[in-house]
Amino acid sequence: MPLGPPLNFPKWIAENSHLLKPPVNNFCPYHGKDFIVMVVGGPNERNDYHVNETEEWFYQYKGGMLLRVVDDDEFRDIRIEEGEMFLLPDRLRWYCKSASHAKPTIIREESFHVTDLGSQLKPIIENWMAHEESRKCKECGTVAPAK
Image (cartoon, rainbow, N blue to C red; front, side):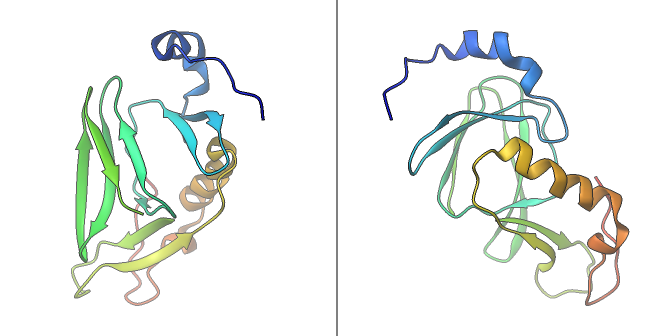
């Protein structure tokens, strides 16, 4: 694969902001062998929990975002604000929020090899939002909100 030119990030954002629209708000300008670069538009706050096969580095160029994680069996919301960076250690999960569980309980998990997150993630999110059964906890019956 031949090397591409350097990317002027502020210029790229200005010229391509139309690619960063809901429900995914995402575009991948670089696909390497073992590494991809994703640009995510905001605001970006979803109710799925992020689990990746590898570490994931976040740099919030503009605005802010909410990253939902489970850290040591505890729900944790991480706000990443403009100018901040965050490294998330290594899937996509939704958890039941019912207090009846002693620890986080997975309602649904999706995993896939990312080649184009924008097109791959959109149908998963739309399916979650459209089908109540996919949001229902099998242990306690609680239905998670669509958004």
